Each structure stands twice: as C-alpha cells, then as structure tokens.
Length: 268
Length: 336
Image (cartoon, each protein chain N blue to C red):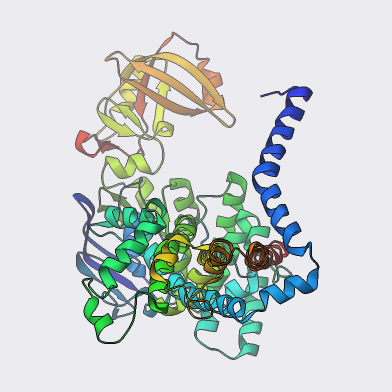
C-alpha cells in the first residue's frame, strides 16, 4: 500500500503522541518528582530500613520464583510441544489461566486454600505460616508469572523440531546429554526472554501479593507494597515516588541486561 | 551386514512396514527406492532406532539391536534437512560425537580437520551452519556422521532439499567417498535416477513391502513386476503389456513389422497407431502415439530413425517391441 507523505507524517505523530502521553509522561513525572529535591534526598528515601527490607524481600521472591518457573516452565513447554497425551488441550488452557484471572482473585483463592480456616489450614495451624508470610507471597507470584517461561519457550521448541535431538542421539548422546547440549542451547533465548518477563512481573505484582501479605513495614512489604503504603497510608508522596523510581530502575536494569545479551548473540 | 527380519510398523491404521525382510551386505551402497508413503524412510529410521518397530528384528553385524536406542547402534545418520546444530561451529558440529565419547582433545582436533578436508570444508571450521550453503551443510552433516566411525551410514533423502546441479555433484561425490571409505551405506530416495547413479544395490519399496532387490541392471532389465518397471524408468503400455519407450520400433510397412515381430517371444504384437506429436529431445525423439484401441503411449527413437521415417503428425504407423525388450504383463493392482 502506498501512503502519501502527509498521511505518513500524521500516522507517525499519532503513534508517537500516543506513546508519549500514555507511557513517557507518567514515567517522566515520577522521575522528575523523585529527583527534584536532589540526589541526596532520593538516596535517603530509598535507604530507610523499611525500603531496604522491601527491596530485599522483592529480590528474594524473584530469586525463589525464577528458578522454579524455569524448571517447570521448560518441562511444561516440552510436554505441550512433544507430548501426545490426553488432556493436553486442558493443560494449554490452564497455562493461560493466570493471564485471564485477576490477581486479586488469586489472592483470595490462596487465602481460601492456605489460610487458617482453608483446606490446607492444618499446615498453618502446625506453625508453618503460608498466608501473611513469605510462602504466600511466593505462591501468589508464581501463579501470576507461570505462563511467561512456558509461552516464550514453546514456540522456539516448535521451531527447532526434533531433528537436531535425533541427530545428537545417533551420534551417541543420551537423553540428558542431548538436553544439555542441544535442546537447552537452542531454547536459551526464549528462556532468557521468559525469565526477564518473569522478573519484571514478579517485581511489579501488587494485587495478588497485597492479599496474602501482612504488609508490616520492614517485615513483609515488597517494593510495590511499599510504594502503595507510603502513598496511601503514610501520605508520604515523595517516598512513594522514590520507591517507584527504584522499582523502575531494577526493571530497566533487567531489560538492559537482556538487550546486552541479545546484542552479544547477534554479534556472532 | 544389516539384517531386518519381519519388520512391521503401524501409524494408527496406516501400515508403513508390512513384514519387511532385507539383508544389506557389508560394504555395499544400497538404495531404498520408492514413492512417498512406501515405507522406505520408516525402514531406514527403524534400522537407526529412531523409530520403534511393532514387530520384527534388526541386527547390525550380527548384533541384535532391536531394543537398543540409536546411541548404542553404531550408526551414522544424515537427515534430509541437515539437522545441523545451529548454535555450534562447523568444527563443534563434526566433533560432537567424539566430544560425547570424551576422546582426547588432540585426537578430536586431528580427526575433525581430516574429515573437513575429505568433505571439502577445510577452512570453514569456525563458521556457523547459517553461514553455509545447503550443499556445504549436508557435507558437514556427512563429516559429523562419519566422525564416530559408524558401522553403517544411513542417509535419509540426503540430497532432497538441494537444487538439481548441487544434487548431481554431491551424489557423484558420495559415490567416490563410498569407494574410499567402504562403510556399509543405506540411502533412501524417491528419485530412480539417483538410485541408479550411486547405488550398487537397489531395493524397491511399495505400500510397506519390498517389491524387488537387486543390482541396478537386473532391476532395469528384469523387473519383477510392472511397479518396479514403472518406477525405474519410463514405460509405455503396448497392447496391454509394458515396454520401455526406447524398446519400441516404428515401421511404415505393416507386413514388414509383422514378419519381424514373429521372431519375438511373448511379443505384444504389432499395434497400429496414429502419430499425435513428434518431440525432439536432443539425441532422441519422442513420438506420442494413439493406438486404434484409443490407448496412448510414447516411443523413444533415435534422431536418425526419426529422420528415415520422416514422421508427421496425423500419420498412421505400426509399432512393435524390439527383440531384446523388457516386457512385463500389466497388473492394474500394482499400478502406480
């Protein structure tokens, strides 16, 4: 389709304007507000004990969730692509469920399951606190991030097919060697992207986590909960901006790392 | 020596291998030839262990490998679409089998360099498969398969994805390589020209069964049935019998044709036909004919004979088979 110069320019302006108003402006405002009183104030605000504890908790959740998602995501993707079993269609639908279900619903259902009066309440009563503790927040985060690795790895597995793996087996590799030397390297970019998305979502998850966290500053507040608490409960607007900026900074770092890895790949 | 006994394989209700028995002698280059769906690839993959059998056994050099996985069968396998390890260099691809076997580094390096020289990829050690042409990738795959010193080399339509020129070059090259290396080789192909060109034995498969096994000349000259005849070269149907188009003689004089034909045993007789088209094909001329019965067939005659006959479209001519011709009774059940 040929597009006239006038139309082309209009389209560009529209697209850029849309992005600017909806994405750049809100982020810019937060950055401006966070750094407006100076760097020292910003650093002071993000290094209070509550902020450091929140950062640690968020990173801890990421550190637990990512390996679990990698292992189960790859296994599930393999089962979905290679498996020929009854209920594969059902599994496909279940994997997408976290995209469809509102995070707040996840929080509620977790309480129903694991809370003191829930189905698995015995565990809580025995002294292992799931809800209002770290296990609850991890469970909530796993639920909302579950599809990312599966959905990123699956198409790559489809694309590479099984011939390379068959070739490896004719060359003497057993299943395990084939997986490490052929399958894993072939899916690593899909996997990396899945991990980046998981990290970003795990850091930013709010709805599911707020339901299952006791929300004590310095104990069970993640960074997102800290932003919320500072803004709503403490009316500490500046503190909220600073914490939000920190949150964005980490996400940006992950994205940057991803881009660097990607560039390293295309250099070859 | 590879021995396959009573091999059976179903895919759902489709019978891919129907009690196949075949012996492949050591050091031979055998082609499994057949149309798609004939079971030739399934048979090859069953020998490799990439496909399990529903029944039957596979032995390689006297060892029953039916229950062994591919990695313990002592085979090398080359795939139609190369199956190159995309994230590895050419050197690492070829070295893969040796690395898995934990051979000393120096030994691996030497062997890989030697093989790359044999397949004509010297200097490509540090390239990635994406930087190679199709023909180069397939030669790399061959080097990779040969690196582990396989007892048998199995090739599944190895030149099928390449263009015509490269395909011809590569199969000549494979023939020479086989003459040097002497590894028992099985090649799957649907291309009769390729089978006749490289193989010293051909097994023709159809509907999961082996129709005939033999050397190329036997198969061409004494086909067991009209399927084999039709698959190895072109055929013309002359009075209900199949003959090669180049075994048809055209005569203007009906009496002369009859007299000559009387000397030919099991001749289909003299057929009177109308010339529909005369197509020069370089050295030969193809004459498209329509018999009085309405049956269409083609004869292939030399340029000189065509010139002597001076054939024109619409003329009537008498066709008969030559005295040495290959004739097979037509069985509609076996038709392609």
